[in-house]
Image 1 (cartoon, rainbow over the protein chains, first blue to last red):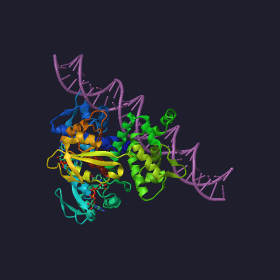
Image 2 (spheres, chains in turn blue, red, brown, yellow):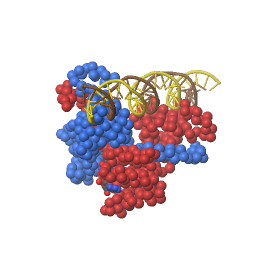
Image 3 (tube, chains in turn red, cyan, green, yellow):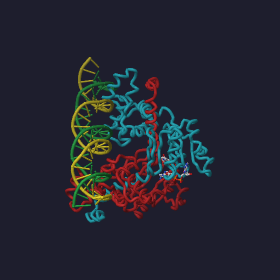
Image 4 (cartoon, protein in one colour):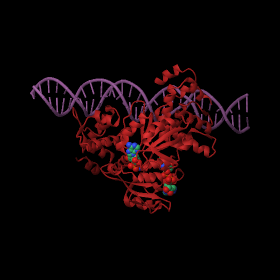
Length: 239
Length: 239
DNA sequence: GTGACTTTGTGCATTCGTTCACAAGGAAGG
DNA sequence: CCTTCCTTGTGAACGAATGCACAAAGTCAC
Ligand SMILES: NC(=O)c1ccc[n+]([C@@H]2O[C@H](COP(=O)([O-])OP(=O)(O)OC[C@H]3O[C@@H](n4cnc5c(N)ncnc54)[C@H](O)[C@@H]3O)[C@@H](O)[C@H]2O)c1
Ligand SMILES: NC(=O)c1ccc[n+]([C@@H]2O[C@H](COP(=O)([O-])OP(=O)(O)OC[C@H]3O[C@@H](n4cnc5c(N)ncnc54)[C@H](O)[C@@H]3O)[C@@H](O)[C@H]2O)c1
């Protein structure tokens, strides 16, 4: 509804029809893009919603509805032009530019993230590695030098860093987040198993490994219960 | 209301009212549990829905509704007993037992995962590290010896492994997944940026870093557009 | 050009998830 | 015991996401 008002206001062009894409759709667009990239590598020129949907494991109706939020880029009776659709999704996601990110906390996880080579091809460039510990500062990781966390404000400004990945211990992550926000960064991907408080307007997404495993465990247990006898269920009731 | 009918049928006990917890709720339970664990460490005995909700960043109404699917464990006018609620959530998630997991692919990411010490306290134990490359097999990582991936069927059986984490290169991940499923494992947490096909009944969850960053990028760009001038928006429209 | 065929884009129904708002339940103090 | 106060638990309203089904729009063979 906010989006609706927008359309009325911005009569300039149809750039605005790319607005108000539902969250659920946004979270699937990267997957479609990934699949399309694979197709491009294979030299496939055209793909139907049915094929693409099965590649990423969603229903074709869902895929078509998702794509319809971006515009009407398919050809009826034929399918989608792989290159063009890929371009349109990149455009919608804002990946026609490169996003500069910083990684904070060069421990086990931070090093792995720094070494990850899946970023470059997907519109993201690691522009800074930061840590506060003297023994790590100055070392080379994946071709970059680790810099002092205290320099973040300057670094963020100079290199236009828009997103920070936090791989710091849970205990210090809130204060790190505060400093990151103070440095003018407004998007955070947090790997520490705590939920952080940030001012309004700052986006946070969490990746928590143990949470993921626990969700899997829940469903495994459900399945086990389904085939289990009543005795088992009864035992669980006792205090 | 479904819960009500159940009670009528299963006079035996209320173990069954823990059934049919919505997915959205299940995915939040681990976060509640994490917050409760923090409270236990702090020696807090009782907590209101308002307090707990603000710790994890959800609304108190949502929290209460979530908890209501597990049963009625609060005390009106007072709040929830921290220990008891923690226990009930653990029970619902199936964390009163320990879940044995295996990590496949001992590269950058696999090593970090193996070194992660956040599992033990959360009902998960890493019981095997696997790789197919001779130069890694036999080495020690985080106190465990890397074993040949080919031995997975035996290892899975002997150690009761229920969940596998895949940290293998995208290219080989589908075949690794096939082997994992063939070894009788029915839950997979996949870190490779591809979607894998598995037989029905096998659960897969994906953790894709680049996807997460791209979602953040999308919202950053949206915000930028909001404050941008019409010229900028217009330029992006042109094919 | 025409007709058969294929696949998109979308209105509509349904299911799932969130928020609201308040009655019911219990504690605590007089 | 009764009253006041607080917080839970939950119907009911709302909103978001999904699935269904088909008209519309195109291709291609002839
Ligand atoms: N290792 C994993 O696979 C894994 C998986 C999921 C989540 N995590 C989480 O990621 C985080 C990092 O894990 P890790 O295993 O890499 O830990 P680690 O202890 O190996 O590394 C933490 C790094 O952060 C740095 N650091 C600490 N305080 C800092 C500060 N205030 N400012 C800047 N840098 C600071 C330390 O110097 C260290 O280099 C933890 O919160 C952990 O729970 C790790
Ligand atoms: N490094 C990261 O931070 C990061 C982040 C997100 C996702 N990922 C993804 O995780 C995966 C692993 O990343 P990485 O950086 O650790 O890669 P890596 O190349 O360092 O490690 C891959 C490991 O898998 C092993 N392997 C390969 N084929 C195998 C097979 N068939 N059976 C058993 N083992 C096999 C290799 O021997 C190697 O040890 C990749 O798919 C990557 O895209 C990595």
